[in-house]
Each structure stands twice: as C-alpha cells, then as structure tokens.
Image (cartoon, rainbow over all chains, first blue to last red; front, side, top):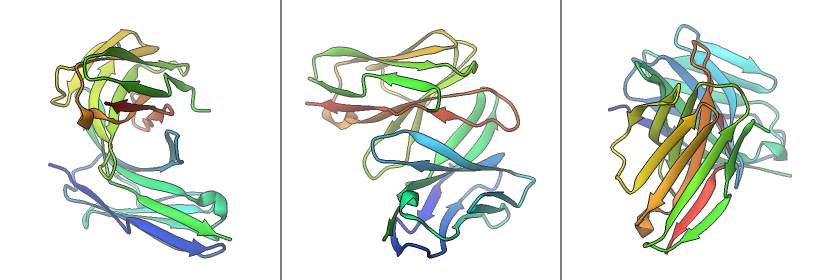
Length: 114
Length: 113
C-alpha cells in the first residue's frame, strides 16, 4: 500500500526566505506526482504536476523535483511571501483502469511572516 | 474559481438525520470524485465516477451513498452517520488523460452530533 509522508508538518519562516518542502513515498511505481495548495476553508489548488518521465517542473517562484528511484519529491519556494501561507499537499498518482488515483500526504502547514 | 461548486458549505446533522451533499462541475469533465479530509489525516479517496459509472469504492461504509445522475453532478447521500464521520468532504473532477489534473471544490464541512 502506497504511503506518502511530508516533512515538516509545519513550518514558519520570515518573508523573503527560500524554503524546501519534502515529500516521500514508499512505492516508486507511480504515474505522476502533483503538488497542491490548500487555503483554510477552501479546496485544493493544483500547483505543479510532474510526469514520471520528468525530473522537475517550474512555475514562477515554485520548482518541484521528482526522484522516483529514491521515492522523493521536493517543492522549492523562492523568495517566500505572506500570501504563500497555506497547507501544501503532495499526491502521488497511480494509473488504474478506472482513472487516475491520488494518494495524499498529510501536508506541510506553511506560515510566512512579515 | 475552480469551476467546481459544492453545497452546502457547512452542515450539522444528528446521527438519525438524512442529508445530501451536492457537487457540480462546469468544466466539461467526465470523471468526478468524493474525498474525505479528517483532522490530522491525509485526504482519503471515497468514490470515483467515470462517465456516470462508479469505478471505485474505497471500502466506504454503506451509510455513505453516492449518486451521479450525469457527468456534471455528483451527490453524496448521508444517513445514520457517526460522530467520527465529521470531516471536510471534498469533490473533484477531471478529464481523463496523461496530464490529468483534478480540480477541487471548496468542500462541505460536516459535523455529526
């Protein structure tokens, strides 16, 4: 059974700092990996999707990497801003006959302080 | 906005009540999902529907009954729930494909007394 772990569970940083969020998974037979952000009281917003054949994806100040062999992914946030404060979730995606299935980690709660 | 709406946003019900959660997507997707998010636990997939057919039931108790009348609407009927069923219930939709991304609604916060 796939297990996804995110470290740290919570993180507080001053504005402007670069930071790294970690995600590890136990079964490397994944199809894709996706990072989401969840704001309090709201649903999930997709940030980056990395296909299993790729090693990284970038969007603005965000860069996500994927190392399938070691079962790890990282989300790098450059020059953090208070608006980045949210819970960040990583999900590994497995392709099934009934569509893609996501297995989520428990998330990293990020607070960026002024 | 993600194009996926959920109603109600908040719901309080007793263990003997019957209620329904509604999800609607305006994205033209063919797959819809129900997830449960409990405190301190990862999101758990509950049900998957592809082209209105249920393709996944992740060992969900029968007190949760999904219904998908068409590709745009998804319901979760609730009856005789337990306090441990209190959670955030999220709906998502996607268009199956290699770069498939699931789009999530804002969720329904459910409290069972």
